[in-house]
Image (cartoon, rainbow, N blue to C red):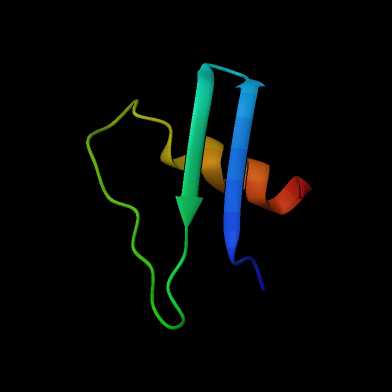
Length: 45
């Protein structure tokens, strides 16, 4: 289980850090913001 995700100079993101909760985590937003990109990065981690 991922507890946090920190990205530096990966794809279109220059610097980002996320901490996940213990239970349910939702990532929402408009099209083209990078939600699928975050899932791809989590999968490759």
